Length: 367
Image 1 (cartoon, rainbow, N blue to C red):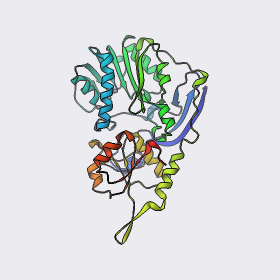
Image 2 (cartoon, helix red, strand yellow; image 1 turned 180 degrees about the horizontal axis):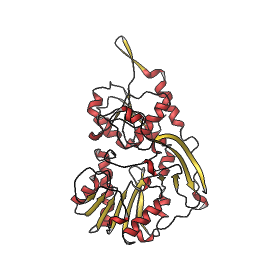
Image 3 (cartoon, one colour; image 1 turned 90 degrees about the horizontal axis):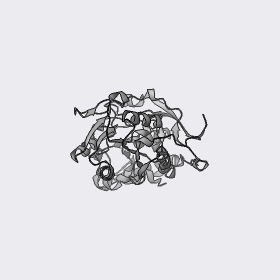
Image 4 (cartoon, rainbow, N blue to C red; image 1 turned 120 degrees about the horizontal axis):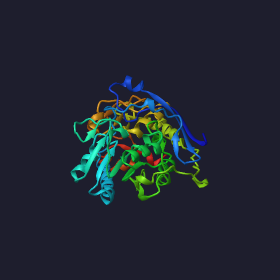
């Protein structure tokens, strides 16, 4: 193929958002490699080593972020965008997860159907399956939030959606921002589940008519509203070649050195005991951060997550236990190191934990 290599990583868990009942199951989880490349013809960025057969989405897939007030504010921003373009339209949300956002839209008066194999409820308007044109669903608008990055051939997938929808309607797409990942050296945001990585220009070039586009969630996400009838294969220009940061993984060693420094023990009475370390956020970023730290010889004690479905479960590849904040507080001593996976949640986390720890926002690349 005509592409340039950007980044390699080996033996990452194929699922970052699948929880495991035991540490042994977590350590033995399926793993895959990443060969991140940019296609010189289309400009698109993808994992050339991706094998979709390794991924089976089911009810053990837990990616619900709406437990967080900060993320609810993000969804409020999305609802405003939706309201500007989709009022009085029949909608379909492909990849609706557990149905939280879909239910919010229904409560706001939208007529909407959902599709997702990870759905756990019993609502008749959510189909517990993968999207396929043979389902016979069509609507005036399509919602596609954090789905397209999981699809190996995104243009073909969008083409199937357009065909199923008789080549008409508007589509709302939301995905992570690859430019943000590069600028922040966010190695913890490159993982196997994401077969694709998008810049805003990539999304815009997929359509002849783009109605609105921009950034959300502190720049971490991209969004676009476009006319499905104008879908096309993007074409790259010479200016599109990505200058991928050569020091992309440099902070891995800096974090490892920080943890291994003399600061790793504290005096408690007559006893010296190690400083405890925890990861706050057990979704994708946390899973990858935990694995890189483990590979660097760093001990992390536990992961914290406010999603009750993850309590008592274990992170893939690293085997870290996941605890609810109140349970983690009973274990962690004051001044423990808390690695916060997403600074959008910093204030929420400080309030939740009574500001008693040493907080390190990983996506700010502080070291």
